[in-house]
View 1 (cartoon, one colour):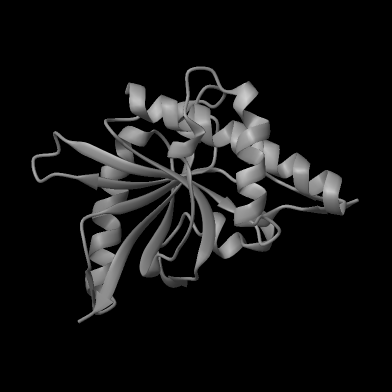
View 2 (tube, rainbow, N blue to C red; view 1 turned 90 degrees about the horizontal axis):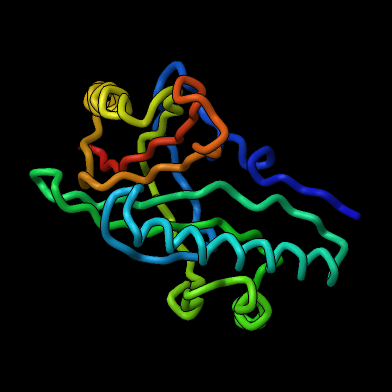
Length: 197
């Protein structure tokens, strides 16, 4: 059995420095994705997680049985879009999938995972490629409520490096289970798209 943890093999993307931001280029990768509206405590956010994870674990076991490769299910990633007054939130929740996962395998996994999902429609989950491209990245350690302070520090760094924010959208990667982790120990990778001035 060949075991692989992409959080470690892609450490520069999934566990960056918590001391200083960095400008990086994120390549194209494949993801399970689902769109929704609302904050993390909202119904649509919870529903997305309840659909993505059963499908991801089904794929993990299908690959393991079919090829003797045991890969780690990746952490939750969310592309956030927030309106100017920060009252409306829309999101694209994503789970990165390794190269062994194909569109055909996802189609088969939808059928197998259907029995594990109650009151959910797995057809809402997409399998697509996505690339952040050039962005600023930072590892925020601590409560989610304090991420705004990290965001301001990242914006200042971007200016110092001769870049500008390409959009006010953010890409957050949540490395811990919030149900089992103290707020001060939470770790979140933060990314903002940037362009050279």
